[in-house]
Image 1 (cartoon, rainbow, N blue to C red):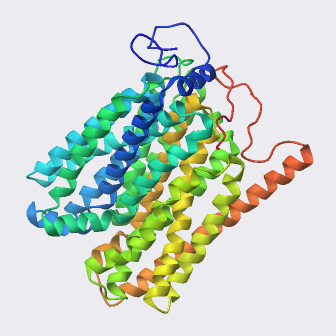
Image 2 (image 1 turned 180 degrees about the vertical axis):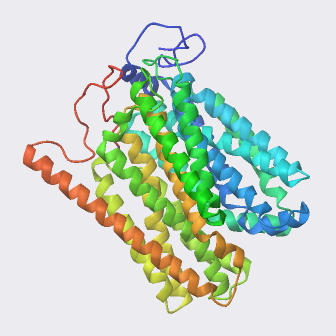
Image 3 (image 1 turned 60 degrees about the vertical axis):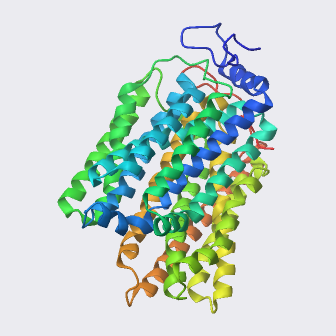
Length: 509
């Protein structure tokens, strides 16, 4: 049934409506949302993800031009990227749960509007401090769009369509991820780096209009009380961690050790706060969900490898294979498309197959990354890169789709916020590992350094694949010995800290 305002019964405003359980509310959300509303939610998230990923990767080749245009030298222009990634990674965790509490549609619209407005300021910025400040605001908007948009799709689509819808949104975003550097470079050469930001404005406006026309949903069984202490503590911890990841190599050892102690102390305070809070921002029982934790950690490894792949392979095409920028962009289309089509394909993967498929993709990614440095021809290099891109694309899409499938829909924003925070931190690690290579350009030893980074990443990916496979095999053996379900299955309800049952709901198609 609908309320007079057009919201589904899960969207009971704070203080209004009859009490209902979270599970009933979430089921009602997907049952009452019309086909048009679902499509609007899908289009809104797709546009938002495209803009977010484009702005994360589309300015790497434009930093020198930005420095010249804004009269900023040294490491100043690097903050154009760093400020955006730090802001996004810091705020995602809190934004996901706030969407559960106060309305996923509402926060998605707010995030798209903020992102579009900040993009307009970026396009008009006359000084580097103003541009960096606007990038922080962009990151705040992105932090709302991703986790809230994913949880909105989880709640407005029924279980048999949920994974496919999320896969399409991630596939569209994957196009911007893979092609972002060359889109940004082409726009910068043809017009200006400001064109990247101008492109965001109409897309964000269209996304906000679509989001406003979809069904609203809340975690109707939860109190609207916000765990502000937990929110502030974890935000401060993530901000400090982000700065350490981004600027750690340039910091003196005492400052680096002090920063690590600050991050550790804040995280300890956060855990203590969540244990004591009657309505925590993040229920610590989420981390007892084995499939969720395994998929999130494996996804973080895959995301780190993906970022390194996206930064190093285009540079190698221009360096080792001596391709001009435009030709390198054209050649990279095969790996880019292979990565982009992964999302829609993963949407059809059954939830029970998520963990072994993730292990297989990490293994395939490791094999591809390790084979790239020894490719004997450009054709072999591009074919290997395409296979590697497909494996990493599947792993990244699988992380976001499968983690939503093994948590209760009413807490989807909370789970999505935690997962996206882990992936963003992993992306920051990837940028940090390759940032020096990007700045050095095509020096004498750059090719050897690129190959070394790819080999090291392959070793890390392979290790993650082995750990994932071992965990899955052990879980299957234990389930067989005890007569239970394997990893990824939906267990029975069990008591939670807030006296509401949690279930691993929403199995994939």
